Amino acid sequence: MSIASSIVALTASGKLCKYPLRSRQPAKRRLFLTETALKDLEDQNSAINILGVRGFIESAMTRWVLGQRVFADDRGKPRFLKRLDPPPPEIWEIRVIEPRVQARLFGRFAEPDTLILNRFHSRGVLRDKKKSAAHGSEWQKAMNECEATWNKLFPGITPFSGPGIHAYVTENCDDFAI
Image (cartoon, rainbow, N blue to C red):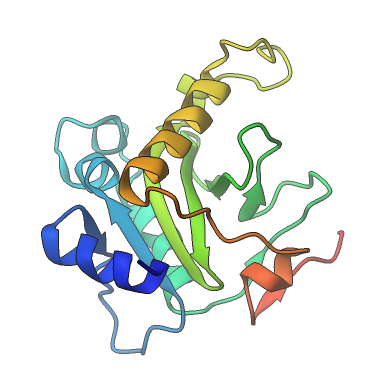
C-alpha cells in the first residue's frame, strides 16, 4: 500500500486526523495528527491546555498548513522546524518557542510538504538535551515513541527522507544562518 493510500485509509478509520484549518486561505501543505496528538490538543486536562499554550501550537500548525515561511536549519540553529539527531532517523520537531512555556511537536514526513505529528511535549518535560544525553533521556523516549507510532500506523513504510530541508519543504522555507 502506498503512503498516500495509507493516509486516506487511516484518516477514514480515525487513526489520523487532517489538521482542521480555520482560515479562508487555501492549504498549501498537509498536516495530520495521530490520535495521541489530537488528544494532546483537544483534551482540557492535557499539559498543552493546562499550561495555556494551545493557541501558540495552533498558530504554528496553521503557519505550516498555509505554506507560510518556515525557518529550518540542519546546523542546529534554533528554528521553527528541525530534524532531530538519530537514532531513530527522520524524527522532526516543530518548535513552539514564543511563550515562556515552550512546546515541541514531534513527527515525521510522509512525503514532501506532508507532516504526520505524533505527540506534543512541553519543553520542560523533555529537559535539557545536552544534560540528559544518556540512552534513557526524555528526548530519546519521545523520539522512540514517535518511531513506534509511525511503525504501527505505516507498517513496512519508511518515512520520507531527503538530502536537505528543501526536499521536505518545497517552497517558502528559509534555511540561511542568521
